[in-house]
Amino acid sequence: MKRFQVKVCGNNSVENFKALTKIEPDYVGFIFYPKSPRFIKDESIFEIFPNAERVGVFVNESVEKIIQKVKQFELDVVQLHGDETPSFCQELIEAKHQQLLTSEQFLDFKIWKAIGVNETTDFEQLKGYQQVVDSFVLDTKSTQYGGSGKKFDWQLLKNYQLSTPFLLSGGIQLEDALVLKNFKHPQCIGFDINSGFEIEPGIKNIEKVKQFIDTIDGRIEQN
Image 1 (cartoon, rainbow, N blue to C red):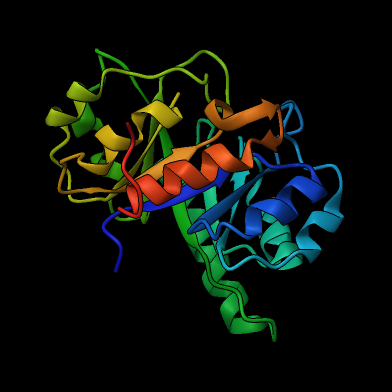
Image 2 (image 1 turned 180 degrees about the vertical axis):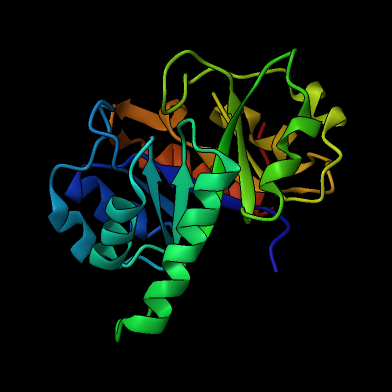
């Protein structure tokens, strides 16, 4: 098993997404938040089947709508990027279990919760999520939903002592690849990249994504 996994998030161009599939990231993220410039408008993108798990990114959406999208687009992961509480996550789990019991369509998915991080973050306050999420996505704290494209101080992660694994997100660039390849935190399972690898919102620089993944996987070294 690879030491780190990479999620490429925010594609909304069919042709660009086709090119991305050849790189084989571990996860691909689709944004279902209408106010995002990376919102999925052309649903034919889901007819492309990369060798990657599908992550649906939702912001303060209803349980019913999330379940609908999971079924419609065969999502493997639900990433909650709004103000969702542990109670909401529990409702989502119960809805999933209900669907497993009553639907002929197999429905299973992981739950990731995005958490905004800055110098005032108290990670102990996240304990309520530990029983209801599979992973956190630790992003830079922002007044806007869906991420800011900026880094937070990664030294703050020394204060993260919970047992729940996390993906590191927020402002990651290609030049960070060699540092992240050697990133040391027992709960870090990978990295979530987005705007730092874009030509424009929703369209990725495929060569940069490839270089990042190859470096993280140890296939090439950065100068």
